[in-house]
Image (cartoon, rainbow, N blue to C red; front, side, top):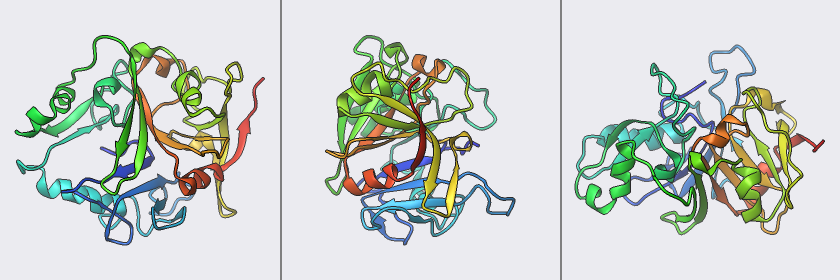
Amino acid sequence: MSLPLLVTLVLPALCSAAISCYGDQGGPVDWFIVYKLPRQDHTPEGGMKYMYQDGNSGGWVRGASLMNSTDSAVGKTLSQLYRSSQSKDVAYVLYNDQVPNVATNAIRGHTKGIQLMYNTITPYDSSVPDPFASDLPDLKSAAMKKQITQPPWKRQVTLTSSGGKQFTSFAKHANFGDDLYSGWVSEVLKSDLCVQFWLNSRGILQSNCSQPYHTYTIQNISFGSTISYSSHIDHSKWCVTWSDSPGWACIGDMNRDNEEMQRGGGTLCSSDPVVWKSFKTLVSDYSKCN
């Protein structure tokens, strides 16, 4: 189920000045979101279909290609890295908690996120040449598997795309010791949350109504009337606020289970009303609190 870089099945991409994001239509875009769909048939393309949106799509549209195609938004965007990975003008860190053909390390972060020193990443390829190393010392440190060693064990920052769009990043260290969503994100966003995560892991946390803002577990997902399935076959991790004032949608890497309360990870949130609505309408069923 893992991909070498894009293990999280929902991929938010923020572009930079030199290396841009490329959308499904082939041109540069400020950001895009790809939602990889689960395999629901036995055709050759089964498991490689996806839904797509960017700032111009007005919400979800069917992917123009397949996830493993160089013609997809992901393929076009990553091809820039493959072409320039040896360049001294490019810095990058590729990381994944489940690197292909490498034993999984359950101590390090269950992460595919932004704030690398908090997330305790497992890098498998990197290049941070000068002057990047001096300008971005934390990037170099993260590539060397270094992490924070003292509290606070969580950090919230605002990230801005080249087009001026703001995203809020939440990152927690393993020592945070609580559920990312019910223990932090819902409180900051001041709203009940519906959370999508992998329901087949051990020690799943139930929907939580013990806090001022409740956290509910999504059970079924629907892209309109044509695509509907159980969260048990969806490995993505995202959440959406119940409230629309403002509405938030967050894409990240954390499950809600006992083990991942003790691991690093995070989520990246947008208050874009179109993005919020596109995720809110995916929730076709969720579990209530006992």
